[in-house]
Image (tube, rainbow, N blue to C red; front, top):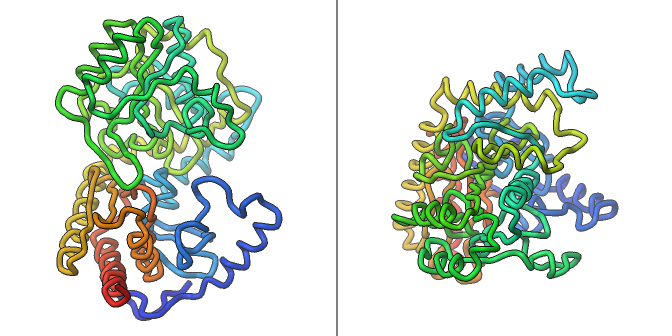
Length: 418
């Protein structure tokens, strides 16, 4: 491993030769080289395309270059890479067995712990990805209500499934025939939708706050009260998609932090610190509907993931991980805002400290922001130009300082290049 320059950060451009060579190999055997949201080919020429390993808050690419990682594997690494407590629990479970013909005790133990911890929920089911459980929640709501339409916020992301993503190649438009989109925080607009379609609405699915690309918006006063009231009035189910934000605001659920009262809660990403697991939780009244629908997968009951999740929850409680995440995240935001002001750059920060979003105010195509992220990444702070960032409990004040050194050089580059 190497960091070009000196101990305090890079002064020169690191080599990405192995990353580029691997990228060419991948393009020959994998459509697009890398598919989906982890395709770094669009991030910038100075972003690595492949990583070799991670430790705590740091990652190393295949060329040996070290980065402070503010993406946390797009959210799952809430305690940091290679957390010894979590990995030890997984290793112990693997000695006994993982993918077996029937579930193991670890599933029941974690279900008990998660239900006990999550406010207002009475039972749990499990999958592997966030999209597994958000789609499961829609099926459960439809089974409960006998209705079919789904209300979501315009442009909100609830997983790579035909019912929720915009019409794309391979996705016929009819998959969204039962979808109604509203504007975040528009209470009157939501009331109008229920007035017109209430007899057909099975559920409203929302994220705890609106985490759109480059911009985040918190719930307004009265938004969640209106959602709860309208769902009750029209016999609809309120689904909280806590896949992205879960475990970074309150271990009892982000709905506690944002003062909402959902009927179903969907988790994934952070709940097992990088091991593949998702969870859906519900209130007692929806248990019969959940029992009627068909939901399964070949790898849904792997015991190692449940062991990881139990260890993650216990370790987060023991260490006040959520408090650390918010403290470090705010240090990062404050440092970047002060730095941007000193350079006269219109950096705009939105969203909570645990999952900050940034962009430049005079940059409608985000071209300058992308250049800035690319330059900072080259200097050792892995920054994504088109997604919210994530803070983990493994991040430290030293990581913030190291990041600010990298971003200062990125601001200097912007100023010199215009």
